[in-house]
Length: 408
Image (cartoon, rainbow, N blue to C red; front, side, top):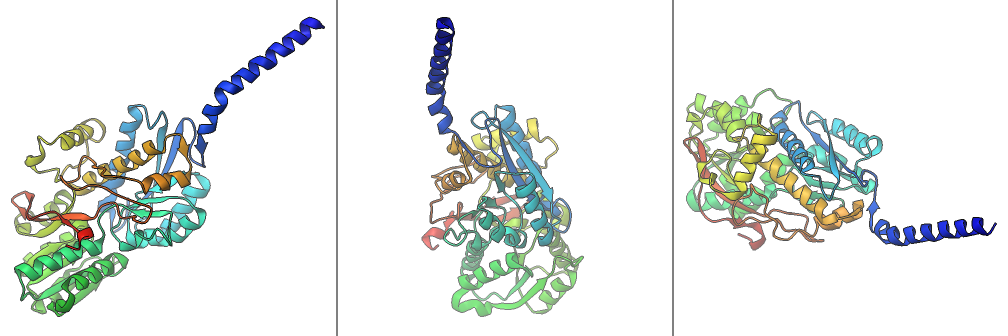
């Protein structure tokens, strides 16, 4: 009996010692659905089909980047499981896929889903469920509303900020311009148009025609013909890639040569200008916050060296001319940075806390001088752009980096 009691006492002491040693360590680890000692589940929704399928490169690049991170040991020892579904750029389908990711797949968060109307369709749901809707791939201003929607955050510069830059450029370079606007008839297009008018201020009457198109239309040719007939000598294409390429082609076909400004989301050499025709794309203007993967000036850039190395090893089929590839890489890098900052507290609340605490973060593919900054009252990570002109086979940057923060 004495020996038995001794064994029990010894076992109890050993268990107590083990608890004392491991207790504080275990207490530091906090998980919500989608996170564990070994894995972090991230959801994503992309238009792998439908009218905006040109953006599918973003999702494929993000998956490749997470594969790279996993091959290097993961984030704080945890592998990322990236679950990406197709919504065909259809809001009802986006809702269906978001519910599947949250309620069936049990993801920790949804990251980088594309589209303004599509993300708008799930924003209320994500906030009611208190699941991060992080780094939305859309420049709508409404993603920066932490008071009303504390679980939703954008990533790229807002469409309104970009449009104000174009307005400023036009007023300086073509003060007597007659502006024709081709825009997508949804929140994406209307946000740009609103920013353009705000930037033109009292000179908003410079806009002689606003021509809207729906994504269900097969082509925008008729709209381009109408815009030419309006007498416009400046064309602003607030369009997604498929329609941007169509507009460039049609303008050339009808011998219309306005000053043509493309929204940044359609400034892809590989995804828009090459399909439209490089020869007829010469002189087109846009603005950017990312480096151009096709531009030799970045060959010696340390960040782009890492990007090219990533492509060679993890995404060899990707088109480095496609801005979606550059975008997806930088967005995924930002997501990984936030997860690293979370440490062992992988709760949804802490994910949002860390996402709102980024300070001067510079992903490899952002232009020099452009930094990501967030705060609890600022859910707009990137607020700077630089004008550029297409020449030869690449974009040429000009002018200064313009920050919307400074009211420039």
